[in-house]
Structures are given as C-alpha cells and as structure tokens.
Length: 234
Image 1 (cartoon, rainbow, N blue to C red):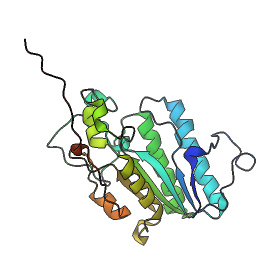
Image 2 (image 1 turned 45 degrees about the vertical axis):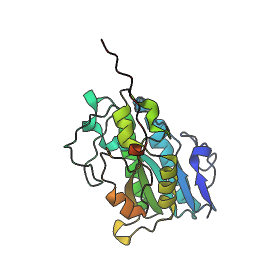
Image 3 (image 1 turned 120 degrees about the vertical axis):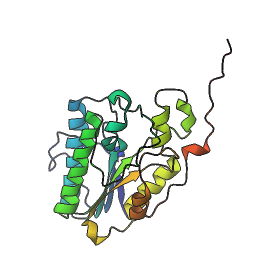
Image 4 (image 1 turned 135 degrees about the vertical axis):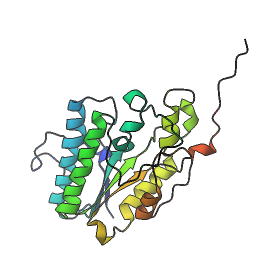
C-alpha cells in the first residue's frame, strides 16, 4: 500500500488545495503526524498548526479518490485535565485510588494544545464516520520523546512520564495496527484509541484500545530502574 507520513511532507495551512497542496492521488493510507506538539503553545499556534492543517490533509485525502484510511495524531492531553497538579500540563498528580480513564469518558483538556486535538478528532469523525470518505483512526498518543524513561527521574515530569510513556517499539506497533486493523462496521469508519505502553501507573484503561487495534503494548516504564538521588545525612 502507498503510505504517506505527512510529518515528512509540508502542507501549508493557508494554501489553496487546488493550486498548491500536493495531490494524494494514488495513496491509500495516510499517517498525519505534522503539527504543533507543545502543551504550552498558544491558541493561534495550535489553530493553524493543528486544526487548519489537519483539515487540509483530510480534504486532500477526500479529493484523492484513492485514500482508504487516515491515521491522526491526537494526544493523551485531551483527557488529563483533572489529573494535573495545579492545572499544569505534564505534571501528573498521582492518585492510587483514581479509576482508570476509558475511551468513553468525557474529554478533559489541559491546554489549548489539547483542545486543538479534540477538534482534530472531531474532524476525523466528520470525514470518517459522517461523510464516510475513508476510515479514520485517531491515536491518543502518550509521551514518546524518551526511549529510556529514567531520563526525567526526579523532575516534576517524572510521574507523568511514568504513566504516559510510549516506547519506540510500542509506537511502531500502534501505528502499524492503526493502519491495518479492520474496523468493525459498528464503529462506522471511525475509532479513537489510547497509544501508551503497558505502564504500571498508567491512568488510561488500554484494554479497549488493544481490542480495537489488535495490538498489545510490549514495553513498560516499570521495567526500567528509576535511580534516586543519594540521601544526604545531616
């Protein structure tokens, strides 16, 4: 199949589709990863870089006549608003009694970035479920910046990274599954799934996601040593 990763192809957010945007004709599968990825981004940045840009990709896929599936990069941030320390993105408040967040739970954004990804998911549903242009899979991706999750040990982000960590191997597994997994007719061409590794402090229930995609994450932040700073005696 012809697979296009739009993280490698610039589609201008203000372009005229007919004149400037590249044609997706001949491609059957598209993975859209390009965009503004910071929870600290401004509203204006995510509006253009995430919302408008994603609409351009979806519209180009629709115009192609050949695209059968589009995978969209959403984020775990769309459901973590109430879990943040003082409302700060990326500073997870650990609570052993908190129920796992499911795909059916309401969205709970923690930033303008998160709200833009909610809109991205909604547009995916419009093109995939309502208009039935092609199948759409939106992945609520965890923290994939570090393959060794001990790198942020002792920082304010440690708890968040432990819970949201997505290894490179599991990212490849989820992305491949999102491209190839059959979508049951009951979902009408559109599904959302969590994409995080099998972490012991995970706040997401990934059972439904693994069932939908047919992929079980292989790695865990619990498999890594988490060194602590030495205790200084008085």
